[in-house]
Amino acid sequence: MTYSKGTTASATFILCCLVSSARLLVDAPSASRLKNFPDKVGQRSDQRFAALKAVLPERGVVGYIGEPGAPALGDYYLTQYALAPLVVDHSANHSLVIGNFSNSIPSEPPPHLHLKKSFGEGVFLFATEATTQRTTSR
Amino acid sequence: MMSLLAALLCLACGFLLVCLGWPQLRPTFSDYLFIASLSVGVGLGVFSMVFFLSLLLDTARFLLVDFVVLALFLIAFFGMRIQRAAVSLVMPVEQISEMRTWYGRLVMTGFAIALGCALYAAAMRLWAYPHGDGWDAFSIWNLRARFLFLGGAHWRDGFTASLPWSHPDYPLLLPAAIAHFWVYLGHDAPAVPAVIGFLFTFSTVALLFAALSLFRGRTPAMLGAIALLATPSFIEQGTSQYADVPLSFFILASIALLCIHDGLAQSELARSDSPQEDRKQTARGPGLLALAGLAAGFAAWTKNEGLLFLCAMLLARLVTVARCGPLGRDWFSGVRQIAPLALAAVPALLLIAGFKHFIAPPGDLFSASASPLHKLLEPARYWAILQWYVKGFFRFGRWLLLPGSLLLVGYYFAAGKEKYAEPQAGIRMSSLALALTLAGYFAVYLVTPYDIFWHLRFSLTRLFLQLWPSSIFLFFLLVKWSEAKDSLAELRRNAPDHA
Image 1 (cartoon, helix red, strand yellow):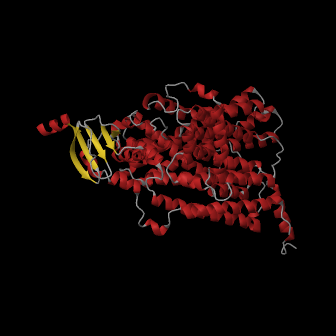
Image 2 (image 1 turned 180 degrees about the vertical axis):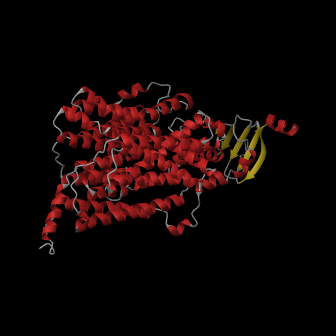
Image 3 (image 1 turned 60 degrees about the vertical axis):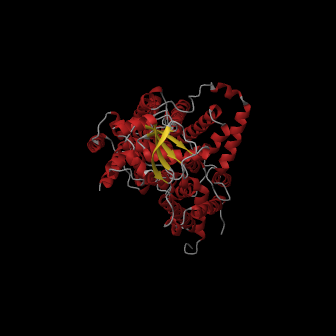
């Protein structure tokens, strides 16, 4: 039995491709692990900010303060994802400011902000003094 | 129930639009598969555009709008079906019963294994990462979809310059299609973007298979599909809810449709002698050209790179029509080879122009205050990009042991190049379009305002992936296939039962 170059090439090609298919299988999350596989994005966004979202206005712009450094930017993106269509600006210069920290409030929050409410697990709502006074007088 | 209605409306719109451009249904599996897989992407594109236009026109009656659009497509479909002459889509495929040989069985088994692995991995990934895997899914595409759906009358809030990291200038095919489905469901279910990602991934595979099957037969089609299914990053990106795989779908659709059109025109021209006959025959195919333009338009509505591809494709078409005699024997027929293509892309282009001008803030790439021109004079930047291109060529698929790109090169040298009787205008044009797109990516890296290495590191592999399905398609059109067929014939002769 003789094989042409084309046939041999095709057979080799298929075998080599299937090696990479094996990688897909190995790298895929296994079925046994999926039962306890945490939905990290959902946990860090929708679930984490559900209580806060209920007290925020439906739309508009709010500020944001969080842990320093580039790695913490992901937390900010997830906050925006959870609170859309509210725009979350990474700045403390707003009447309402969301605090998103790993556990407790930082030792030195911006001086013009006052803690309005803590939602646990490092999620806080700050307001400027003027906003707090307006809310109190009502 | 409402999700089923939305899916049916979306598919029906896509199916009717594809059938409007398709010359005639031929009762073969490949034709139906091509139309079905193309209908998925076209339907989602139409759904996206209709939703965005409804937002612009401030109408909340999406169901009514969808039914009106469907009714219009139905009227056009039946109207054109009556007027259209019957055309036979005969592609130069030599049909042989390859599947009955050991070789055919080997290819089919390989295909089944690759498909099974890809389906399993995709399903597990969708289950594990319902919001997508990677930042772009929720910081760009799904975030924008939430702004469109949850924003109500204030949907423009999401396109603020305060969120530059979310790229509010990116086109909206995916976000608007997702938001359209959410309107039917009544809430922002994460399953919708996940299913859309899954559909685009496997529709691309089906489209590649069907297109290759139309040209070369089932076995090369399976080989092409295996090459794509066994590209781990393709399956991973597709189920990560990024826009690169949907873009690759539309690029492949556009290129495959152009190759089908040109292949058809060439085979018809070869049979006709008189110029009068030439005009009559080539007039049969504007529908395919229009579908190719529509797909390219959807590519531009998916990602900014799609806009680059659209320009590259139109330029390549212009060059090919000007140079290749058989497709344009006179000026008039030359115009007819370009006009349907360009005109079909106009709705998407108008939508993009309106979006970029009136709604989106300026993009990040060209809004830097310093002029990027001085970067063009830095040889070190050219060298860096070239090095990354070479590295990326071997790495972008995340293959194991042997890169798929290298496998294709090896296969080409082993099997040889197909010798066509006439120059294949469609293959030439498509190759030129892909080369121009790659050159365009190169130029963008040259002038990028970001750190060039950071930019290359986080985007180049995805850019290569966008062109990968089309490259596989063109590769299997170029590579010689008769060797395998010869061997099949020989094997049949040597088989004991044959004697």
